[in-house]
Length: 485
Image: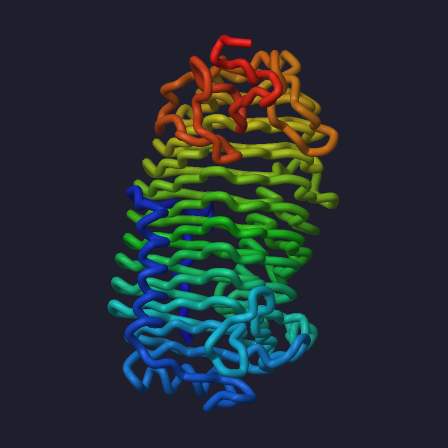
């Protein structure tokens, strides 16, 4: 059984250095191209050589590294098995294949529902220089979740990358998985949907997945970490968690433990690095957390000289009806770790928007955020390393930034209507005449992002705008932009 290293009990942790998201994803694409172009494939399904995915994977490993193509059985049909492998050779495991194994269905994935309530539906460990890809599966634990007793571990997907290996997980739907955490009984205390750890110089890319309606239930006084995803990098590893949809996941702990992130808990320890980018979080919750809860959508932690980049994230309507006083997003750093957060939208929590806490020489630099329509407080910052810049606070119960113990807030628009296009319908872009236009600082610590939350170039005018979106005039207003009519 593979065990995952946990952070210290007082707080989770962070990551080191900067890795290019493009280079990491390119590496994953290279892995796919290499396996498709240079390797044979093993077929699994009613028309394949093997009846089970586990048999196909075992054969691919025995062959020294093949592609495993899994047939789409039929709409609503699944592979009722648990898949488990630990490899030093490269494997591309993919679903959705037609009966001839020459094309993939444009929409439907191969469903894997598991059969053992005490094991992950798919567990994949990569070592050495192996490159492993897992794509186009519906990993659904709803059929076995009710079997599990306290301490059972029905993670949808558990992945670990060691040494110089690479794991790429993309375009899957991971739903309905339930983990009951109990000290010594569960594989990891979080990530009912997906749990991952990259260590040494290994890389994990998690991209384009839907992580939906997974549940994490604490059964003793130990903390529970992130129902949707448990994301960790330690000892020099790197994780990219990008363009995923995290929705309707619930972390609960009615038996005395704390909750650490409703949708996602992301932490990087030692000298590791992490990037969270372009993810969307909605409807995630923390319930019955008797000794405290953190971010309903996410908790993001860095420690020991780690660097975490948090870019282009959207958090909206994540709720905690049983625990007032909790924010949608919680960020924390210590021991010289750094978080760089830019282009974020945080709206419609049931209490607060964003809490950022830097301790023990940690730093958190937040720029170009729009934090709106949270009923009690928009932003609270703690510690001399916490700096809020170029941010709109509006429609919250209290828009004034609550900065304490040395935290700062500059170029923040909070006492004047920013003139959103249509906040009532979720459009927090700026109208013409907004006081946020061209009012931002063009040199925030960590650098100004060259694109806004829409992916449009920033700045558009003489200076960057305040908030997540850069104002663009309506085309009808600039028909004669050359000066002639």
